[in-house]
Image (cartoon, rainbow, N blue to C red; front, side, top):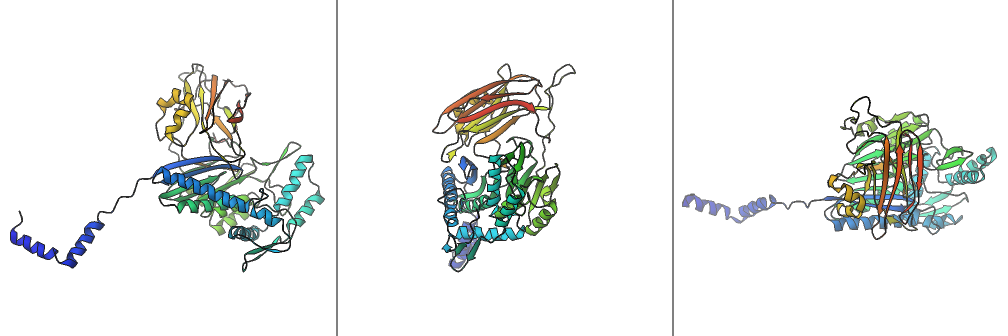
Length: 516
């Protein structure tokens, strides 16, 4: 018990107004309100800027994540209406139809024009908006199945090597001074994801965002993202990646010739062309670049398909970027900083089901590929929920090879998979990594089964059934299956389409991934 005299002294001391105020401030400041918990929310769409769109946000509530999705899509629409080469109503298309007169343009279009001028200089002409003239020439060549002549190439290159606009910062105007077809590709997709990330991070209650449009990715805020870089020689969604990276506060872009190009007399030519020569770039299969700024990453990834490795290294040093280049002859060229960002794997080597020398084992030279093309709608649409799994001849699930959903409460919509496999599923085990790759068409995926079960063991050769289950929110439910004999003999089966899947196939084939 405190003596009365001591208590009186205590009260007299602390009832002094200035002392009491200081004491109260210290007490109150020590009881800061705790930060609200955040959760990770995922949205996936198809047919956004001609490819797929994934948005991940860390938000204090689902309503905040819904707002982030709306803001992101609205910003994509706004910027597309300005910068699209393919929309005849876009600001850029309308400007391209003008000649000789200064036209006042939006700050975004002006900024992109300035960036093209800068990158044209930085790459000594390897990036040029007039590459559209050369692309047009090669598209015609593919239609005719005739290679362009030397004279046609020289004429196209001469058209490219001109000044195509004159910018005036005083009035924010651009004067179009040639009739050469221009395309705002190369890095505009990356420019857009940068702007989208900025908008999303400006929302109260959002602490992090990962914006992925067609394999170009920005990671912003308080979040580390695992990013897998696809192997250009395999490029399945779940293939063994070239690299698995651990990124925070960075952007990554990948460009390559393995998904788009021109086929003439059975020969494949890249859609990435060298404006200096008129020829498709052919010495690089894939280039992935990490930078602080998404526009830099996108521009460098495209340029590195055209420049020599030595030129690429010099430019990367200037821009403080890290890179991985895969050449046509299979060489892997990486910057020192790239290697430091690679995420080391702690996974052990797979076990095997072989008990003795008489038991047969899965032929490791073969794999099962599931090719899936989701129904493409005229407007963008949410990606449906998808489950792809493999059962043995006794109807036991040996492997779930793909499971796409955004919230665990929707898993029962995948009725067949959920009925058979929900007991093995634990909430939170869904893969949350991102994939960086060359841009692919919307809704087009290849999923592979390597012959291992869910525990990582190889299964015996034999007869298996592949199931594809698709459920769309406010759409239809579909399930498809295909029996396939995995016994060392190549097979392929086409599966009829339906309201959710326009085309699908299952094939047992030789392994296409050399990283196994």
